[in-house]
Length: 140
Image (cartoon, rainbow, N blue to C red):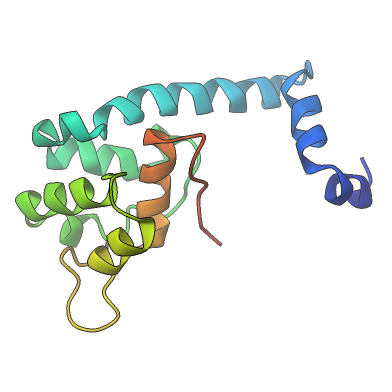
């Protein structure tokens, strides 16, 4: 498909992809659905008290999340204080607060972050798997 057609109708393009018989596209869709199911449940605000360092680190690996390369790089600093990580994820996923308020707390404009290494490359996939119809993923 010409690039211009994708730019003119990106949703139509994605819809056509979802109905294609291409095995790679089908696998991508199956992977997406599995990741939303599994990790959406893991990061659900009601389940954060159960989140372990092993679970969090597992999500960061491409082999498990099937979509995001390289987000595992800061896993050691992110999981060093699991209480603080759970707290930050609770703030991130609290839809009663504006997204700006939540992000300002997690990624303050000055001073230390509550969870070192927790930035957009990890935050946005978590938001996406918990609220897939509300948030997209911000990456390079």
